[in-house]
Length: 586
Image 1: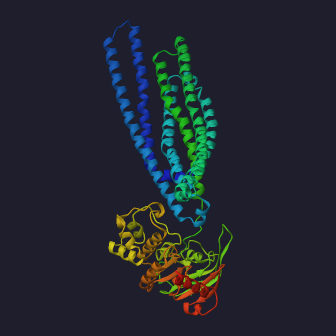
Image 2: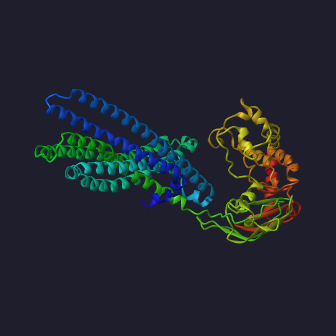
Image 3: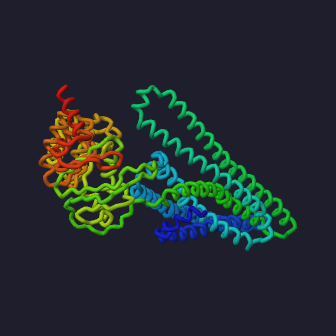
């Protein structure tokens, strides 16, 4: 139960609803206790009538009618209160489910890139859906039936003891056996539930990757192989789920056997006591049988509740593993003043933790507000890492980054990112309309603004040719579009945001040179009032930049303007001349 203690804060949050549910449960059980007493009284009345040789028939009739009326009334009241109990406690569990899912989602958002490199998407989804669902069953039905069982047990045992304590002890004798059996079964359920949930995460991850990479799978004709792998995982999941179900299934027969044993004990011992005149009224035996009957569901539910608690504990343990993960990027800053966009790197170094590759080594450069910097270099030279450090996707290990002469960590994190527009190397589009994907940069933008930025990104004509134009629904990750169209829609989204800092991470790699030149020409007015950093492999994308730096294995090997670098021997001149000759050949 240690893992489930995490949920205590939610019980405190909804304490009034929780306490109201307990009060309703107590009152409902009080009314349900009247029925056995009224039945016992009715049998006693019949017994007296028989012993009196049929005299006082009017008294018998009136007393039975009164008891029947009271039984119906008490049953209706107890039923209505039970309905209110469910409305109170089960609805509370839905609130807790909602809060817990939001807490996990917000925590996922705060976690760093390294966390997502180590964990698979399917596992993340399973913990926020399946595992939270198991936990809700604990907060709702498990807690509700536990309270109901405890109160009913206490009330019934007190009532039974007040009538005949000796018969009470005999009738409840099977309960210790039941308690021990539940303890043994619960341990097995916990272990098998954990195994099942872990396997379900693997299955979810496999399925998610399969559908995301369906084009690659089809291209390599791997459907049959992946299908066999899926069958193996599915069979493993089925085996583990059946093992869990078989263990859960032991509860039912065990409950029926022990409750039946209690019935036999009441009839055997109670009958003997009646014969020996230790019990004066036959109605007492009927009353005890009804009390035992009232314990059938609480006892049966106790086993079910035990399995729910064990499954919830296994699920909450998995949830807590992620909730205990600390975000690597901490929001320590407090500066929220307007950002102009001057950026400076001072002896900045960075090493990727997962690969131990040093991506940057003592990088120094400065870009003034409103200027454009182009970063060139071979693949793996550290170009994208610079952009990730500016947006604080990663934090530097040494050196200092300043924006407007303020250290980057002193700027409030959300404020920093709100003032940066970025087009990533691998553009991500949501399964939504093209319009809403562009609006992601500025949710309240007008249609005219959307069309304007689409024209600047040279994608308006493509969109206009679609049947539904800007209302065209995209597939997962924008699979409906070509690579170049995805890049250009991402550019339009970034421009629409109108942030003072614009970061373009090789965002024109999937477009042809003619479209590239058109887009860069359109960018001239955009770049005027923005600090822009362009990461690129093409010298043509960098030639109009105010400053160019060349990276190689994390070091700056050349820097200067286009005119300066074209007159020097080195990487930039060779790249420019090579791409110029390739263009002429084309």
